[in-house]
Length: 255
Image 1: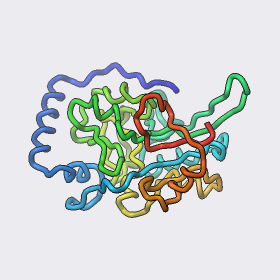
Image 2 (image 1 turned 120 degrees about the horizontal axis):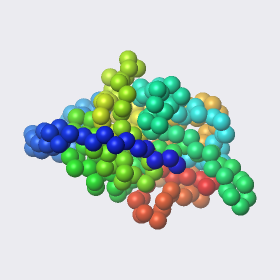
Image 3 (image 1 turned 90 degrees about the horizontal axis):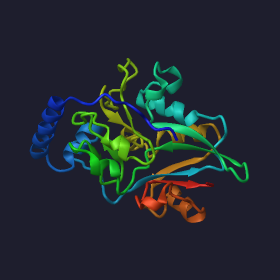
């Protein structure tokens, strides 16, 4: 996986201002309310439930070589410019990307999507100086664009290289329920706007299913009757970089 590089630091003045703004916001809003208000369209008086843990199962044995339906669907749903259309591909958004891996011993090839793993113990949250990176009670890890200062500490801390900084001016594809901002870090949100509308799925999963691959399953890992819970009981799965003990929300079968 390639790492993101950028050497333009945020100004100290901007960092101090936004840091103070973060503290002010934190004392004027009730815990949980601020987080959901800035991230999506959930009613202000309804916080995410800790009884739920949203997660995704990636069945790499069904992930087709050359297929990027999941990437395209994510781009369309969340309004970011695809890498192929970016003027600066190395600085393009990293919400989700396809990886093609080859075992050096067996030469076996494996395809899989890589995205934010929505860790239960997210290192991106630990290193964020303003609290802009946060984890909801239901396990979804998000970035508050209003308090993100673009320091990129979270990008360096993420072992999955699943975060990126918005470099390019946002075009007219930006969606009203998917807040983004130049100079802010962003990543996969598990299509939180769809989750909070009650869709119960993500754009990438819908696209994969529509394409007939069925390599992706999304759902509540705390619900023993959910499809993802049943599949996780049936299939051997792995966590990428399990040695870090991050208890990720994305599990892989076939790697």
